[in-house]
Amino acid sequence: QTPPSHLAHIHRSTSREGNIIYRIHLSTMAPSKKNKKNVESMNSRLKLVMKSGKAILGYKSGLKGLRTGKSKMVLIASNCPPLRKSEVEYLAMLAKVQVHHYSGDNTDLGTACGKMFNCSVVSIIDGGDSDILVKQD
Image 1 (tube, rainbow, N blue to C red):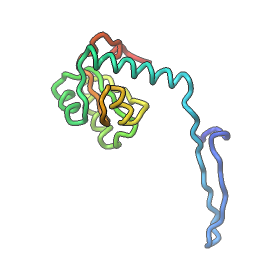
Image 2 (cartoon, helix red, strand yellow):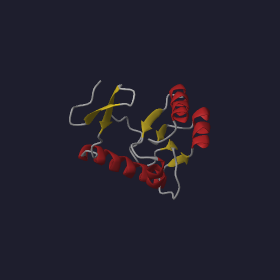
Image 3 (cartoon, one colour):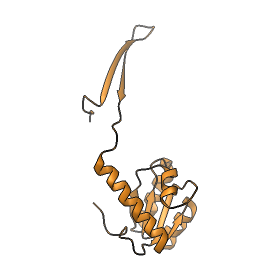
Image 4 (spheres, one colour):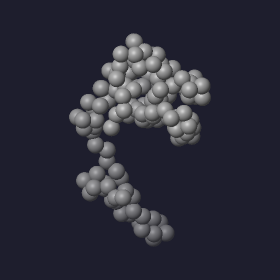
């Protein structure tokens, strides 16, 4: 699948040996208003969970929550390492738990939880007053 022409720039150059090299540079667009609204919505829901519900922060504790069947939902940061992400997704699938790929990185996820540290995995045990556990599209 090729990106739209306004998102990709193709540069053609020649190497010392005479080979033609094509370099494709993909430009990233600023997040749309709809995407930003979804992030703010998720942040406010997460804040409410931390206030009125119960959540586990961290990879090891999150896996423990998935194995014991306590978790209702798992949030994974965008910069979580692929092996770790797939392990969490696999355990969530076995436990029939909803997985949400958080659009921000681990710093943003930790901040959204009201903590002053990074967090790549958040496992929600009790939603509290928040509607975060309601199936989202």
